[in-house]
Amino acid sequence: MNSIPNENIKLDTYHFREALLDRLPVASENNSGINVGELISKLHDHFDDHQSVQAKKRKVQRALKVLIQEEKAARKSKGKNDHEYFRVQEDQEESIDPHYWGYLMKSFRQNLADVLPAKRLTAAMEKLQDRDQGISLNENIFQVAPDVLSLLPADFDPVHLSLILRALVESKKIEVTYLHSNGDRKTFALHPQGAVQSGPRLFLFASRNNENHVDTFALHRFIKITMTDEPARKANNFNLHKAIEGRDPNANDTQKIKLVLLTRGFVTNLLHDCRLSEDQVIVDEDRYPGFNACVTATVMDSLNL
Image (cartoon, rainbow, N blue to C red):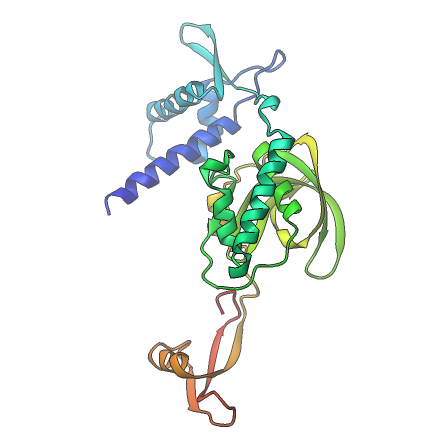
């Protein structure tokens, strides 16, 4: 039980560092740096109301020290106690070699084939996340949610999955053709922010060009994906953990409906003990071979149903 607060502290510290890094200007000849006082002002939403200015300053300085050690940030001294900070531009040459990525995806498709008899996308994705694969799909850009539904996975193109994951890892903009649930087919640019593989479906969190709003896009609805050389623009304050908590990507209409269900055996006994709703009614049923009860209840029209 004592480990939970410690884990929360670590997570909050990590999120604070990422927020601070987002606010640092990229190091260049033309860019001016930013000092600790300016950072405190820009990070006002990330401090507790009761924290003093000195406490905020120490928190920023601790985060900057770690980022400098990780070579994600740099410091320029203008005087004894006058320092400016910058974000270190990522080396584009560190992006994944296309030949290696092709090998990785070939391996992934084999993993997928291995688990297809059981029809579990989750198992294939967990194999892809194996550290031995040599690619970093960290939890800030990709997460796997438990598959509690035991549904067959939505049909998808492995090449599209490959391109989405690569765009996330390399933080690149993609051009897509997408089939909306209402049947509309549209072409537009997306800036990937993160992805969640939730049960039998994978969802990409992304913003469109000139927009800061982040939407979810289902993998199986992509018709065409092209990865560009342009860097993906980060949406302000986007956090994958909070996005998943705040919006269930599997959510359907949340209206209430009247459910009429034929049951037998274990399910009938279970619903006698644990009702679907307060107004649930179970009556004996012998008109349909194999079933012994008819259950009526008012429930939410959700994915869990």
